[in-house]
Length: 336
Ligand SMILES: [Zn+2]
Image 1 (cartoon, rainbow, N blue to C red):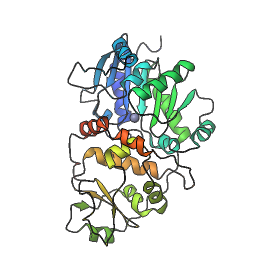
Image 2: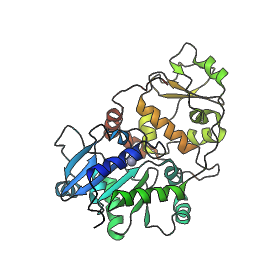
Image 3: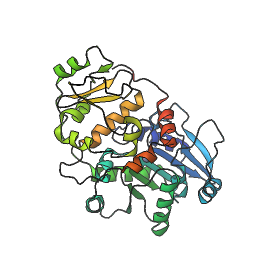
């Protein structure tokens, strides 16, 4: 019978493939799970899917106990050193054996739009999908998805407003095929990477801890007028706020660096590009690249639904802090 061959090994293989695609997963974002009898094997918080082939990233969770915790609003206690992902409840309530959640840059570029449902209806026609308006990760999101799944149990694709994508199925092969079908349909041709102005950036960076990054895509955030306008108006999705701050700092020559938060991973030099902090961590680097990829896929005329101040504050609460710290482990990005 199809599905019985699904093992933890095949979940780990799938996790590595997804985790190494920066257009799907950045740093420790994204999570995968597999249900075997009464156990939910779920990615641990802070672990990177990309390293599933040489690090322990999965943690076993008692499924009935997990569902009871959700019912009674009790937090799940970890039985090992690894802490289950914040999205464990969402994985637990879905009836399918295999669940994959990614921060696909193509999906997010659609999911930050006020007209997302009509745009997605056109592109996902014929697939069993549902739109989930933005909801805080953890129990709140799990409850909304649970209601959506109970009403339409055949749903195997959930597009999460201002957040990402969930795809599920009975085995890893089916889920991977479905994920790539969704990706194919939602693919957006990005605006070309904007040419940075190295002369200006190098002059600005001289004698500071800001460095000229070697990734042209990043410079889009400062050198491409459309992207800069999108970024300046607010926060598009939670990981942006958690890893890059509620607003990207701008360098103004009249003020120098004195008014810029020196711990920010990035600073925008208007019209020229960006500079990155010499202490930028691997997680911040991955998130920053993913962010630039999302922004350059958002259409010039898109009606954007930014997170509200209240939503950003909730994201930056205790869970956001722990998420960032565990993802980073303060590992500096290795020099290029
Ligand atoms: Zn997520």
